[in-house]
Length: 339
Image (cartoon, rainbow, N blue to C red; front, side, top):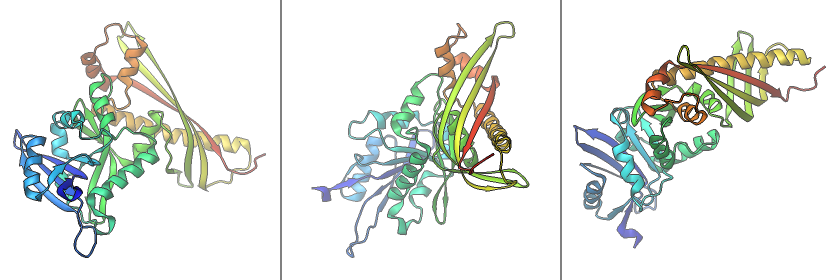
């Protein structure tokens, strides 16, 4: 019975004109020698259901999306909006809500055509890349269920992995930022750890920092907690937000003046904190420029009820101009015995 089914592993969406979608999918397959050989199919249709009929005709099997693990959008398609595509997928009972969602520079079809012969095909390869990134970042925000939640929750915005197709495969290159349902900007990969800290998530990967010409340090964060506060000045009618992240990190590598005393340790912690604050401020500038509330600050402001006339429309107009203060408190461990 399984031989009669075409189980879609990954699907890519690129808009064609005003009302059509180019949908590219990968199906698992085997060649006579017993090696894995995924089947790549492309159709142009007005809807997902219509596309499945065409795909079934092309593959000679009944195409099912029950094993769909990844959906990708070309950047131009993402900038035109994804809500009309992800909503039907989420409501389809035959499709799970835990698939990964991502954006590809250029066309989504290019990612599915990527040469990953030694990596079990583009579908499984991309799934493994995104699954590993999810474990590192300790969040499920890249899954379809979270994307739908962020689309439908006032005062929140979608942020999903942004990918680039290279000769060696598919490379993660930061986050695609959304305003409403349209991609509006991109957060560079080097600022993703800062974004996770501001979001109150434990970042489990290593972080390399150059603090000055003589000081380099590599940290592995073991704990990160976030404190937020908001104030409203009725005279100036302006909001001010304050985000403080308390970060405790293990020192894996250190190059610089030898740290022998607790005073020297505190000075080093201050240097790291100032560096992280600069990155946090740059992260907020990019988010606000894109009018992408990917940290859910609007949801927080509404819950605090500091402004009685709060509305989603008011927040969207105010968000790019609100002052956000970023503060980092850093504690370093594994530097040896100190005097």
